[in-house]
Length: 188
Image 1: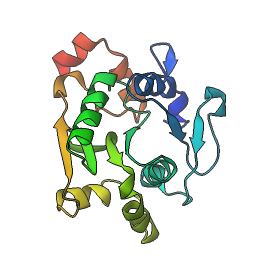
Image 2: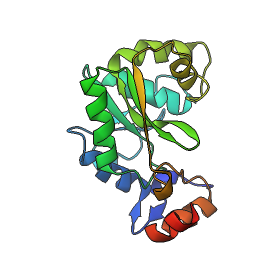
Image 3: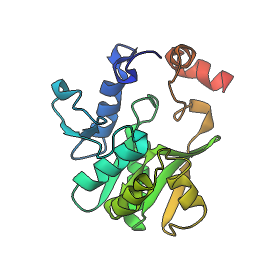
């Protein structure tokens, strides 16, 4: 994108404002994992800083889990503007009902680790991954999930036709996200 994706506007709101609105609909407390330096303070939320510089999303997940009270934590990337509160509530309900370590969205492209629920008891395991140099959620944590190194996890399929887990990474992705829902269904 060439700029901070969180500030990119879609339908009159920034991606971060959209994510906050969704999280507010399903979570009692919302904090922002903002990397290694405080950002977005003007949004009035607690800011969670990464312990490891340039640790990417995996460091953000670890920071969120380490700073939260014991229990389940909902994780949502700002670049997933079509995820809704009802889907997150479904992930959270299943994670709580089955006392899962993780409950993630599954799209046609695979597991979506930045749209999920993690239990705080995973913080030490994620910290160990970071300490050994892992930076990608997909190559580290998702591998452990799929290899059943973490036995208590689940995935909930997302309807592929509404594009909920389609990331906004490029200007073309942003234009596709701007298309009305009916058009996205026809082209998905």
